[in-house]
Image (tube, rainbow, N blue to C red; front, side, top):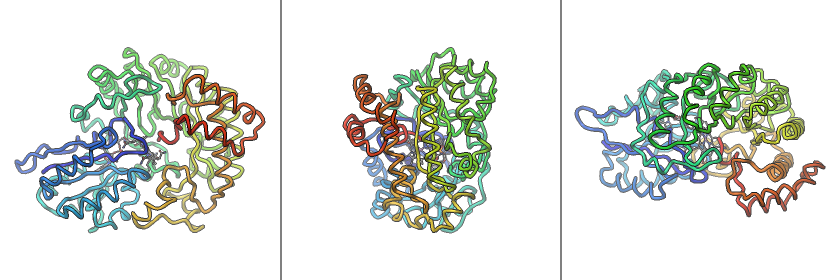
Length: 489
Ligand code: B12
């Protein structure tokens, strides 16, 4: 049997290791009933002809091939749907399995389309270790733990820490293609060192998958993988794509100590209230090890909104304090806000934009990312949205139409309390903000372009007149300003 692990192209070609597929591959058995299982990862982000290569492989033996596809909402879904339909129409014997966050949260919708044969729910390695033998033997996979088909859902699969599945098979990829130039370094690689997140924020799809469970790889294993990326593939920077890398102080300090001699710069996601409670020596240790920036979900400056998001008790003043603490240690905080929740969207936006002004004043280096709230099916704001008439599309075709085609990119609010004028005001503010303080993560802008943007936006920023900044938007478009929220997570 031949398995194609396919990563569709994201918004802009994203040169990062396709970890969903790379990690998943660790669960593939070497053989079934004495027959070898051949597999390859095809990544449309780095290989423009990935689809054509996949099609050639399928054409050679449609019945003996299984296409594994990882799907995120937005551009990946937009490509995956017509392509899979086309493949099934050409080769009905081809089997297609979807996995990842979108199929997990919307499994029924995916399976309502006859081109999807099965969906793997959540963590995939242990599930594919059972699914592949069933497929190789031509059996119906219904009933396997972690698998949903049109025949039903199997029992839920027990989670395992990632390191238990062994090192990722880096040699299956052309690693040179993934050595990305970023603001962190010339050869940035990414790693994912934990499963889940210990919190249950009700706007985040991670909660749908893991329900507050968090299983971390031990620090030694993290240091080992980073060391391998550094020594064998020349990594000089690492992005940790964990949902919550900084959940445990001791693990982080041990990782920091272990990777410090490698002289890397690194980035990860953490929580404000967690890291605010860490010892000063821990912060110093992180800074010494090359930690350059931490992404934090600050979400809102309206305490009622934060509470409605089930943000685990986070207090608005903690964002202000963290900003100062991070500045003192020379680590850039990257604050992400999810605006326009259900409590009082206008107050939420007003207070948050005020807070952003204050954060920038106190620490001009801090980075700001703005999203609009988009419901995920979890108790809380979602229920309120449903009560007010909100419904997800019930078919994949529904997901391909606007506004859903851009929905999960969290830029176009489609909540029942959505006020277009408010959304416009947020994006106008954002254009002025990014002109006054262009993100360090943009490597396109020249210093003189940054100066021009700053000079032009200064009067608007100072006076608070951020409405309709057409001149700034035009320059940002012309100079292809890289918005962190479009490329980010
Ligand atoms: C890296 C990343 C990206 C990268 C691209 C990754 C890629 N595939 O090339 C970029 C920056 C492009 C990106 C963009 C977006 N992302 Co993104 N991204 C992530 C991130 C941080 C890491 C993904 C990852 O590598 N995880 C590590 C691997 C090992 O875990 P995994 O993906 O869960 O894979 C496991 C299982 O899910 C399963 N599995 C996954 N795929 C498949 C497929 C098959 C066939 C099988 C059997 C199993 C399987 O097995 C794997 C191993 O256990 C996640 C959050 C996270 N920490 O996971 C968000 C996340 C997946 N992104 C998300 C979103 C919403 C987006 C955006 C749409 C919006 C945005 N602004 O962030 C954009 C647009 C994407 C697009 N379609 O163009 C959401 C998805 C939510 C949802 N409802 O589906 C997440 C969960 C973030 C969040 N907290 O909300 N993203």
